[in-house]
Length: 227
Image (cartoon, rainbow, N blue to C red; front, side):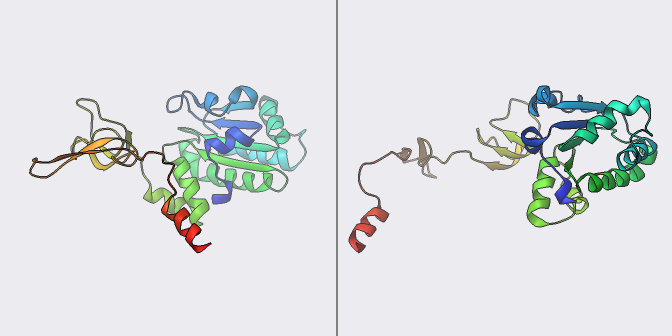
């Protein structure tokens, strides 16, 4: 559900309780820093089993007295949250129960959103792209996930011996063996100084970045004449 997804920016700005499930350190060792974890109530769980989540769901819906004492802190933190953010890392669910656990988690989010805000973020390279695409297109997360398998972008010039990337933004274009697609971060003669050389290499012309000017712009001239 696109309405239940989130980005790290949303979690940093709004969440007061963050429930981290699974291994996030291996892929995002600075996650707590990025979401301002020091100012939030952060709780962590290992691989989540369907039975554990079902017990949590029951304690939230029914009498909180009937809950496992070992999970009391987690339950109370979730119960007290005004904006709960659930972050799913690697191996968030017990593999043999992943489908059932994910369905229960969706139902838990639906139940919590009756009285507060609760969102989920699957922590991988394409998470933000999926969430924003879902918001803008109203497509299901599953259909988006099948299209977006990985994001492979290099920023700046590749180092010597670097592997090929799908897209390179900025830096020096060293050819398709380093990047399938090259996008300049600045345009010579507009954003920065540069030179242009004619194809037969006989003429070189300097290009100067756009400078501020005290003369009226064409639009300002036109407005003056129309007035």
